Length: 328
Figure 1: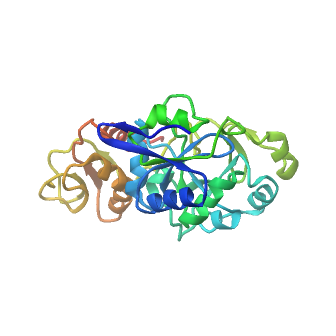
Figure 2: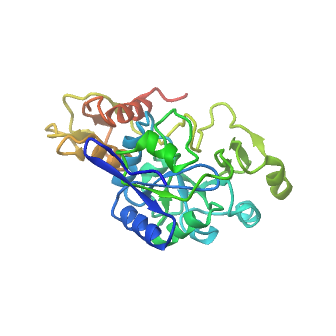
């Protein structure tokens, strides 16, 4: 078994895949900590998907430059379908291919528990039930959806052993639940069933032929101009209907203010991302803030400057997309 790794005084604990280790990992996740876990595909970097601050910690640990949608993991299809709306196609595919290396992108339910940051502010969410007994036991013990992109620094090779996780993220996360090497070694297939046409967003461990045998033709890749809803790709995220003004140093009574630090005076409404100027806290609240200020009675959203450090770069990327000219 790999040894715990300490960086700058922060230790990543190695947990065995027994009842005690699973229980310890579940307690850490419920407390908002990050725990890597094995699946049949690759190791995932887990966080409680209902806690926006915990999800923001994933982006910080990975050094992820964009707020791409993250996959939520569940112990069963019934548990997953409590948070997303499953049509007949989704239920057919889930019955045949879950548990397994398949991720489904489906509309969020109105009472969805998952933090908006997990789905990058979209009205859809990627969900999966892995074919890995330890992982499903962990999700059952947590009792909440677990967000889990691959447990590696952004842009690096996905990990298939606990040692790989430690090499990339040791000292940056609380623990690794070591369940040995992954059997498949490639990421899950991502299938978008949120609209009329079924669209393959990412090939992976579940074959397109198996999917098409269940639900008919699947489009390979999203059409030009269509927002990509899956993980592992450059995504087009939720954009407010009101125009967004960046690096605002003043604000009018007709604008909503997205504040970072002491707010500017005179705004028609204020949503505070982080009073203490913390970029991780700001990331956790970003999509909630954009939605809160995107309302009748305001003419636009003024976003105060955010430093390009920590998650500030990812926040700036998201805000620049929100402020970009809209298609005519």
